Length: 241
Image (cartoon, rainbow, N blue to C red; front, top):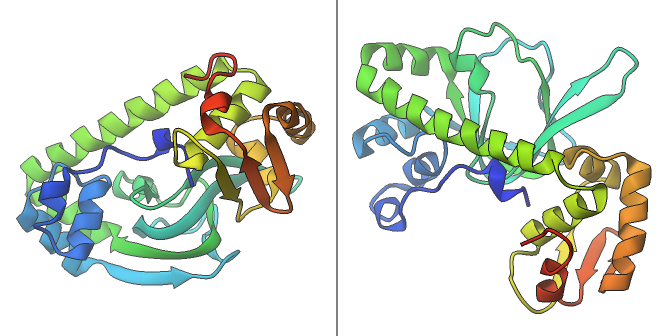
């Protein structure tokens, strides 16, 4: 349920089929450039944890001890202002990783993380992984290459987003969530509309206006569900390709 720009390029399916489940998941994330041997080692060091909807994974300012890879579910990364207001930095779903700062000398997490729905995560001890990388420069370079690729994708997505109106941002996001190029689609949001607004960088009142305008294009709300009558028709709106 996240924007495709947030998800790193997946490892080839043929390669995934040759790996154990945990290693295959790791290959989808930051570790796509690693060898099967290294992926198996990482899988052995990882621990699987399940978080309930609304449960905190880590707080802003907590000691940065772990790197997390999302197996199922959806995470929200956010910062909290002194007045208690939240700034949502991104939503992260299966195949993505969070808290990479734990590998690069950060003593604490600069943002908080919360499960927006029941989520299963692979948890990797940062100190152990950092030591392994220092002992194996080739593995470290493969990880840096993957991290650089993902950073480039995020930057491209951010720069593109800045050129879109609130209406166009919402359309683009809904098309990503629809999961199909044609026909009807039904999207169930597991998080409040305020989170959706923050995730695509618009004010809540602009989100309401954008949804009202979308009603004329066959997009309707039913509680926490969004119904798109014709995805192909929606793709023709404005600059959305």
